[in-house]
Length: 434
Ligand code: IMP
Image (cartoon, rainbow, N blue to C red; front, top):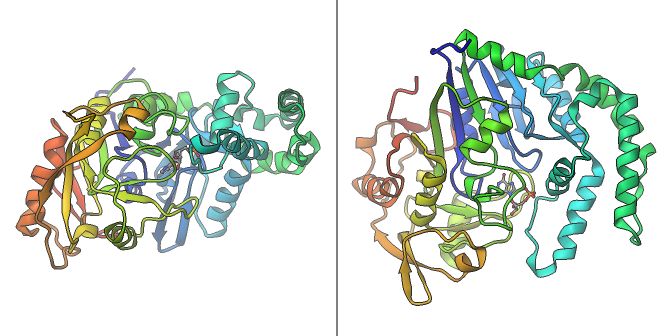
C-alpha cells in the first residue's frame, strides 16, 4: 500500500557533473528519512565538513551523518570493494555510526582489475579517449550488461564469491589474449580483500526493496542523490564522452530501485557557469586569462582525481536540453559568488553550425564539436554577495543575469535555491523546501 504522504525527491546534476550538488544534498538529507545513492561509484563524490571532521563521500549516501536516516546504496551503484571498506572504516573511526547503512544485493562489485581495464581501454582509444576517472566504472558496467558481473549479494557468501570471481577472471584472461596481465587477474590476489569485505560490508547487504517499500507505505520522505551530470548520461549525454550510467531523473529512480510514485520534486542543480572534466565537446569553453581566473576563483579541480576542470560560460542551449530530458520542477543554482568581478560575462543562447544558427543541442558529439556559441552579454557585478540571504538584496546585475541569462533557458521550473558561498549557510532559499 502506497501512502499519499510519501515524498520522493531527486537531486540531479544538470550539466557535466561537479555542479556542487553536495551542499544542497546535505541540506535536504538532514530532513530525509532515507537517502539513496543510485548511480556511479568512486568516480563521483563530494566533501562534507562537519564537527566530526572532513569526509570525502563517494559511495556512502549523504544521510549517514544523521542518526534518524536510512542510507541505501541502490542496485545501480558500482560498489568498489576496496574503497567501500575504506569509506565505512573511516566513518567509524571518526565516530560516525554506519548502523543505518544498507546495501542492495543487486549492486555490482568493482574490483581492482576493473581499474586496470579502464586504463587499458583508454590507451586503446588513443586520440578518441574519453578521459575517464580511471576508477573502473566502464569495465564494471560492461561486465554487468554482459551478465558476468559479481553482485553485492555474494558478500554474504564469500566462498561462492571467490568461485565466481575465479570463473570471471578466467574469461578475462581469455579475452585479453596475448597481453601480459598483472597480479590483479589472479583470484588469490583477492582473498584478503574479500574476507574483509564480507566482514565489513556483508552484514549491510539486505532486502533494500522491502525497506524502500516500508518507507513508501509509512509516508516517509525519500531523497535520491544523483551522481555526475545529465550531459554525461550514457543514453542522453554527449556520447561517447559520457560516463557509463544513467544520470537523468528516470535513470536515477531505476538505480535507486524506486517505482515512479510519489515524486514530489526533481531538482536540477546548475552551476552559474559551465565546467567539464575529461574529453568531449564543450561549445562555451573559455581559453586564456579568463579561463585561469574562473578556474582559480571557483576552485575548479576534480574531487576524485584532482584534475583541473575545463571552464566556460553558462550554456543556455545545453540547459534547455537538460530540462527537456529531465523535467526539473526546481532549479538549484550554485556558485553565483564565483562570477563576482568577472571581467566579461556572457551566456550561450544558441549555436552557429556551418553558417546557420541552431537553437537545439545536437546529440551527435562531432556536430556539437563543430558548433560555435552565439553569446548574449550581461553586465557583471562587484562587491561581496556571500552573506546575502534574499534575492532582492543581490546586485541588480546579478538578478538580471539569473532571470534572463539562466532561468529563461530552464522553462517550467522554480528557482528554489541560490548558492552564494561554500558554507552551509551561504545561500538564498527562495521556496519552502517542505
Ligand atoms: P568515468 O565515469 O570514470 O568512466 O568517466 C567518463 C567521463 O565522465 C569522463 O569525462 C569523466 O571525467 C566524466 N566524469 C565521471 N564522473 C564525473 C563526475 O562526478 N564529475 C565530472 N565528470 C565526471
